Amino acid sequence: MDDGSHQQTGRVFNEACDDGNQDNTDGCTTKCRPCLQLGQMGNIEITTDTDLCPGEYHMDDYGDYGVIIIKASGITLNGHGAILIGEGRGVGIVNFRSNNVIIKNCTIKGYDVGIRIENASNVTLQQNLICGNSQRNIELIDASDIHGYNPSLATTTTCMGLQGPSSGQIAKAGIISSQQAPTSSQASKSRTKKSVPRTAVKPFKVAQAPMSTSSKLSKPKSIQQSKSTKRPAGMHSLYIEAQKARWVSKSSKVVFNSDRVPRFGVAKSLSKGRLSNGDIAGKLLLTQPAWAKDGYIQGEFPAIKLGRKPHFKTIVTMLTGAHPSTLLSFDVLIRDGKRITVVTQQRFSGTKPIPLNVNLSRWKGKTIRLILRVRLLKGTKPAPAVWVNPSLRT
Image (tube, rainbow, N blue to C red; front, side, top):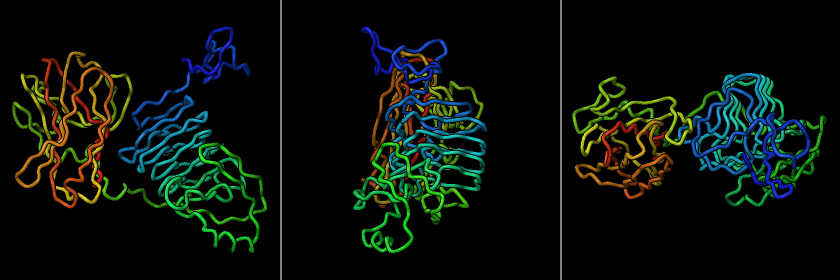
């Protein structure tokens, strides 16, 4: 691993990991613990101490499950300044039923929720920058003994949303919801009340709020407790709803999650799998076409009414072990009444996953049926095609 940031006598060393000393020019040794280089896939489960490689990662949480999911107690997630950027939905980091956890040095923006802590206790947040998340920056669900989100503890800061008319304002007292930014008139009124230590938080840089144990602040809405977690309005997980679809292949009808002979076509859900490029991803919809010339498999989902800005999103690829010469076509179709329209056809071969973001605004306000189809264009070997966390925002 070489981040190219350190040079010595013409050689380049990587110090993105910890080799046990303070010298950042001697390169890594055998003691070095490599950092985790994130890819395009979310829903990464963390079960041991993990260091993220520094960098900016654009990772969409399609199904509201979390880009990074902490699922073990007593571990530390160190972001080393890594920046997670969403596309306005889902959750950046989820800590689920894991106690005695430390989350530090992470920047998270552009999600519905930045960090969600659920059914957990004794969780410490250190030097994180959680900003620009549309619903809440930090969300607690049946959580207790959470350290670091209170401004008086001066360990975790948040900033304002980066879009909209309030984007030029600076967060007060270290933590504030992007939905609850104070107006100038409100700020002037607050000066007549008991003063609160303030710090200017610049976007995307970890800043430390001043220590103050005397200030009494009400709990900001950015970290308020929530009794339930709901999927964003208008969001449909096709991974979950695939069992309701009508699946057919070139050979016959296909029973979802059946153990039928694969050569007739397979449609099933996989909670986790290794992709053709070696990444491990979750929430996979496997649609393997029939092993035949011009073989295909397709699923037609139940009717749904689209809203004003409908989009279909997923990542298409194959599972590891697929024959490299295989050529597939991932097709998205719309049935509008009796008419079927091909919206997109994405060819896939090789190993690199391909993101799909399909605009369905042409059918806004209409009731349609979405069809997902995979065709075998080349090859006679098993072609385990997968749609990674396919979702439809209506």
